[in-house]
Length: 181
Ligand code: VGL
Ligand code: ZN
Figure 1 (spheres, rainbow, N blue to C red):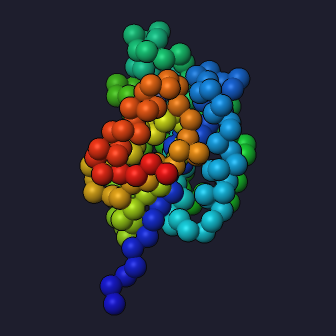
Figure 2: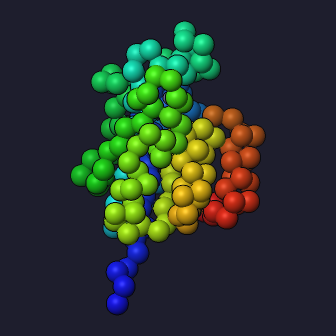
């Protein structure tokens, strides 16, 4: 019999800087903690991957470099750490992105080995949650669809910056064959 295919959980950028009090607050960002813990604890996902937005201090997305965001998630700073609610023993792989100063690195697949990692582990489906729905969760979910994975965007496990952009993200994911649940 052929090997069974697996489903991965992608926890996108659940980091202090995207939570209340952080440098780039997502409204209610920390409110995903319970749902993320529930998803990571089900045992249904293999592997559980947590991405980190992991920028050099002069990243091109920062306003002082002409970008659109305040300085956030600088490598090695407390703001860049995964949210303390996240049980690291439930996370199989921590994957850093946004390390190239000249690219946004919004998607967990951008400049990382994520696609290869998932294929090596016979993953054919991913559930995506995290922060922010309308930025990095969006880019990660859409790129996962493009890469041929079945995609579920977990609404309760995500929060975003702009309500209209969040709705647009849900519509885009559905239009391209993904699920919002
Ligand atoms: C993100 C803005 C800038 C995100 C990352 O993780 O959604 N948003 N960098
Ligand atoms: Zn960033």
